Length: 144
Length: 113
Image (cartoon, rainbow over all chains, first blue to last red; front, side, top):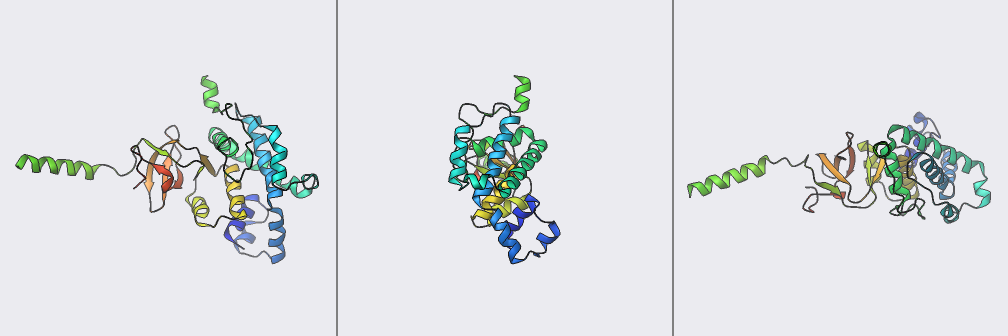
């Protein structure tokens, strides 16, 4: 199994570190994981992260009109959105976001702004946080 | 002549004594630069070919707060530096992040050397 896939599998907690580390996954396992790691399922994490940021990062707002275009571009049809795989990735995305935010709220919010805002990397197709509503760190909020 | 030699020696000594790193005034000059708490995470990102797997990995690292996206123009303080990776921190942070050495630019616009 390639290194990137193994690392993703570990981060997602899809298999035990021992199994992933020892390359004990069968070809069928890898095929199933690759199925799960398709953009149409992975986009669930992006949407969840945007939602989590909107709920927890002061000044961060989500452009809701861009959610459907983002899903569509990733190939997430209504059937996909209602699938167990999409639910699983949504839950994983939310857990990851909560973990990242808990470790470093200001840093995570800043990073999510850069990831989802107007200067987003190409892997995000549509701006999910608007220009002008720039984030403030919780510290800045306190001092404001 | 003797004074000139002495002055040159002093200048040379100052240049040599000037720390190569830990300077302020450095900044991120590439939009969307990835900085990771673990050097090994950044090494994976930098060394693996750009595939969907890599993009998925990067997404996981960003969301779980192991790596961060740094905006262009972000001011950083440089710590250690190796061939292709440099450790930086934002002035108001204590934790260092590992970033691609070529994503950092000095006060005069020079790349990190």
